Image 1 (cartoon, one colour):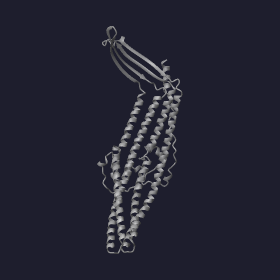
Image 2 (tube, helix red, strand yellow):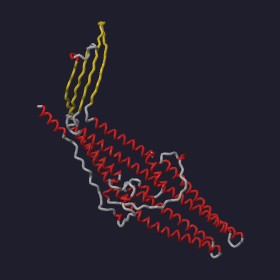
Image 3 (cartoon, helix red, strand yellow):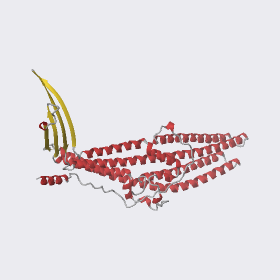
Image 4 (tube, one colour):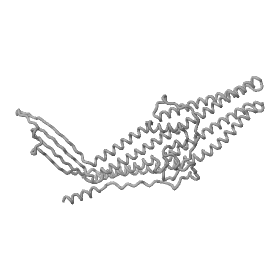
Amino acid sequence: MKKILGVFTLALAGCATGPAYQVPAAPLSAQFKEAQGWQPAAPADLLEKGRWWELFGDATLNELARQVEVNNQNVAAAEARYAQARAAVAEQRASLFPVVTLDASANRSGGGGDTRTGNQYRANIGASWEPDVWGRLRAGVSGAQAGAQASAADLAAARLAAQGELALNYIGLRLADAQLALLGETVEGYQRVLQITRNRVNAGVAPSSDLLQAQTQLANASADRLGAQRQRAQLEHAIAILLGKAPADFSLQPAPWALQVPQIPVGLPSTLLERRPDIAAAERRVAAANAQIGIARSAYFPSLSLGGSYGVAGSQLGGLFSASNTLWSLGLSAAQAVFNAGATGARVDQASAASDAAVAAYRQAVLNALADVEDQLAASRVLAQQQSLRETSANSATQAEQQMLNRYRAGQVGYTDVVAAQVAALNARRSLLQAQADRQSTAVALVQALGGGWHVR
């Protein structure tokens, strides 16, 4: 009889009410549309694992990125949520084991006309266990594990987002430094031109309107320089917050701008499923939702519980543990809802719908990732071409500005022509700086779109 009962119990233990989990099919293409002819500058095995920011060749950025991983408060919050999810796994796993309790009591009672009083002592140890016959508890553990894995992916996504935001803000700050240097040189040049114009007006060879235009040019350039100072200050404050510091306790001195733009090895679209933490998190949430279906279905079957206790009771403390005072019990209980107006079926339907929603969210995450990579690949190609054109434009505009100023000194053109040439030259040089910053920012965005590191685990 015991053998038959044991075989029956093992058979029931193998039952599982939840559907077998399979990773949902992802809407992937064979290759990236915008990666045609993409030629990385270095083979993938030479690239730094994880520390992608080092590819930009800026020591200050490298140091700041390492601080973000330690001090950023969003990352700290994600780490705390991951720890919480791991604790939830431990809690669910504990439900697979028996619960043992120990209790003791001592009472003294009396009443009515009887003046006698009585003592009662009791000590008891008990245990209860719910055998996971239908797989409900195991589904809870699986769901909690999937949730913890999703939290781990969320932590990786938080790190990547903070590091990417830092890199973008740092590039913007160095762009502001370059613009301040350019505008400083421009203001000095406009001051010299203003003096030349003042001399010509005083000599009577130029109208006073030339002096007014020269003053206007100088004032506009000075105002633009103040605007660049304000932008730099805001970016410096943003970097301080990313580092977990108060803005008053952080400063970055102006430094030369490292204009290195790395070429990123893209790989195949399917590698995004391994590299993008947001995709990994979405897939793990599908697994957690699938486990909830099993939990809901288990309500169709009776819940079983085994319990037992052993204790002693008596009126004398000294003889409490004698054999005549022992009490014990063993029991098996079962409970099953006979009628609940379809509530169990409704909960199963809810879990199934939630699983379908998680699958859709996963596939949407894959589509968004593909679009991100395609966008940044297209932007990288176009911006490289634009930077070359901006360099040609800036060189030509600078030469035209100098030639126009020389002709003005010779009295061959009016000052309006000089103003037009100055405006064109300044705009062309500022556009070149912006194009350089855009290329670096796009490289950062491409790294983020690829999920940070690009090495297959």
